[in-house]
Image (cartoon, rainbow, N blue to C red):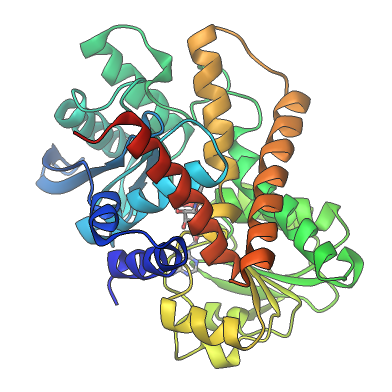
Length: 411
Ligand code: NAD
């Protein structure tokens, strides 16, 4: 099943519960605008390279469209379309005044020099500057992009449209960014993990955790969960997975990964296993925080964790989701679990527009408030309607977007 088909599948399960008409389903699933552009650059070697960039603007019924920018060799229109639609439901679930969008460039970010990365980013903005903006569509970091890339985006956009830091979020703290944005997604994942562990009648101290992906999201989720007394027994990145019974020392792993230059490769204080084995470890909590589609109908029967928090977008394929849910596994879905990033992006954007800044304590407090309240709403709805947390989250999101669409008047 392709990425957008998977989102459509989850959408329809919730739309059935909401008894949405076919016409409303079509309206809500169809993107407002899909942009595909050519990005031609000169590599450091002097060779010419032509890349394809995408921006899909899915829905703006509840506010300007919002979504990350992914630089990864597997990016294609179908994936960007599905991620843009997930952003619409995500911003609605946490009830922040945004719609949904997503962008990406099909390129292996690790193969680029810093200069090449900057040239590609600026060229992309040259192509799409007139369809993004602080009141229309606001990009943010995702896989393969970071705060520095966001600073280039602001700078390039401002050359065309004048000073406006709110055109992009996830900027460096020293350059119109906000304290706590980098940790926000991982921290939100951690907050919801601890809440769910409690709801299921367990304790952090007896919770063993495996985390796939040790990037911006996985690192902070691991740190938060260790600080909350969980035992993080395995983490991984593209080089493989690292396992230690009884728990890794996450501060040590982060130090190694930051100083070593090639991520976790060569980390010797743990046993090396594969990314596939990590997903099947005997742990109480599994956190996929890397790519989509890593849990499939093939490996789902071997997944032992009774609780999965989807830090990555769409890490579980629909057929695997059904198998796991029927087997009693609790899954906190992506559109709720990883919404911490867009929530703090919203704080950054609001403050850019007011020329005002919160301190880190305030950001963390407000993040916890937004995530907790969304969690309570989803949990209650799931209980009341006897549906999965995923269907409940989609129901909450779809309901808010369809109400806003109707209230604005369709014709
Ligand atoms: P990142 O680029 O910082 O980190 C990605 C990590 O995944 C790296 O450790 C990388 O080595 C690892 N990885 C890549 N390919 C892998 C593979 N084949 N097997 C195992 N590991 C692999 O990206 P990120 O920002 O941490 O994003 C991770 C996920 O979280 C993505 O699905 C992204 O869409 C989602 N997400 C991110 C944010 C955010 O604020 N950054 C917000 C919401 C959702």
